[in-house]
Figure 1 (spheres, helix red, strand yellow):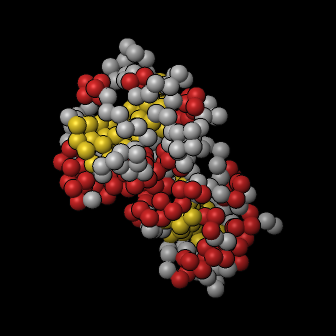
Figure 2 (cartoon, helix red, strand yellow; figure 1 turned 90 degrees about the vertical axis):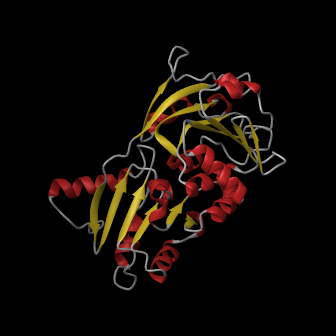
Figure 3 (cartoon, helix red, strand yellow; figure 1 turned 135 degrees about the vertical axis):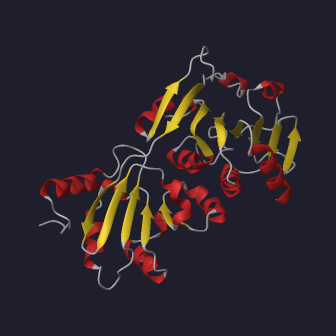
Length: 302
């Protein structure tokens, strides 16, 4: 692992660099002519842990482990490429352009980056993926200077797309719930991974990998309301960071927090993060009502 870290640090902390997840094990000659200083191919099927072929680095890792390694090394990449996820063939565990996967890798991508994917391999039409997230995106045409032909990376008959994507975090909304502060924000939860414990949702078959590389992450489905508060009070967790769950209805969770604020005073702040614009509408509505009425504390249903 030390050799891998050394090579990645030397190659990826300078110049313009791209990563290609689920790349397959063939190092195509055309990769050498791409407008990047280094292209990292990530596929668990590579036989050697790391191989360097010209300006191509081959890593024999699952995507989750590769992302964790990039985060650890402080690497920022210029392009994120995904080809055939292998879902139809059974080799892939989860879609690489899902909410979970994309949000996890965003912290190692630059504020503006190139995204190449093949959306028609999914049931959902991913061409509109970025329109519903805290990102701005433009599908590039071949005449654009940043355009990379997706066909370089995959022989799939289904067409790929090339986007220029820019991150954007929106301003938070908040209200008081008894002695606690509730914050809701359309921002990627993984951007705050180093600030404490995160409670997230993830594909069931990915939970083991995620826990292996991110010990400060807890899986929401493993916890009841009571267990969440016990965890926070046992660890004196001041800020609880949560991704969307509960199918959009948070009334009972808020009631439970309020009812237990004396005997279980932690967390002091609950920060709800989300990507899609329709998440946490119930909580935003409460915050808006408080702002309109000049109230500072939410008392629950009256």
